[in-house]
Image 1 (cartoon, rainbow, N blue to C red):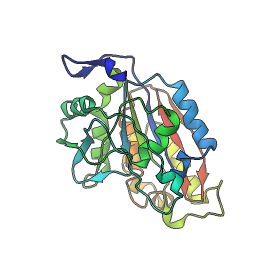
Image 2 (cartoon, rainbow, N blue to C red):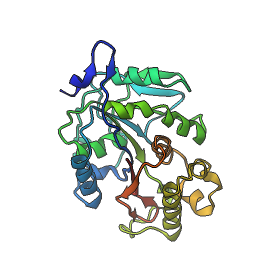
Image 3 (cartoon, helix red, strand yellow):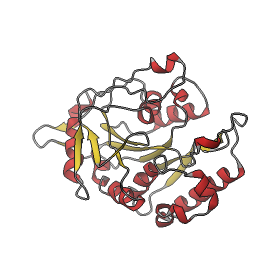
Length: 272
């Protein structure tokens, strides 16, 4: 049904009003099968957003040498984790893919060559959130990978090159966590963050609100609390794609704005 919005003659999506852009703090895969304040936030978001023609997700959990997009008709549901209940491994999210959207992205991006992938599918950074937002799994979904060889500026600039998709009904989601340090998780703090985690999260929010994107790109210079918050870049980089898509004077709002287990922030961003 959603592919009715695809212009079959040109291979491009019809024009729409500008879609919002999201950065979603996805947290534990268990969110996919639990009801909590974060999943209620995702559910409300799914009801309030304009209905997408398709979804592009940049997930923390797909790192590659080079940049790739999933280009298959039926992406598999990837259970890229261990040690969780069988019920989580039983979850399937059978959303269709969109080879047409993959080609659209490859046409639009000039900064790097974007390869086609027919093996990956949808990892939990994507489906654990979309299962709650769009439980019918009827909207086409593709993923774009994170090139682990590139610096933060590259990822921010690459996000900018996706801008035209916003006026073709494409919902672009960066999925990660602003504060993500699994080495020091504290299971005795299920609803709290360490002081340094809350300080880092507050710093990120202040810079996002002030449009200080260059400081966020150069996050290594933001102090010790940010070093602790971002010990490796993969959960932070999807935020830069989201910020790269912001245009001047667009409204920014935060949701699911809470730290959990000491060193994990669920804070999420909506632009537009």
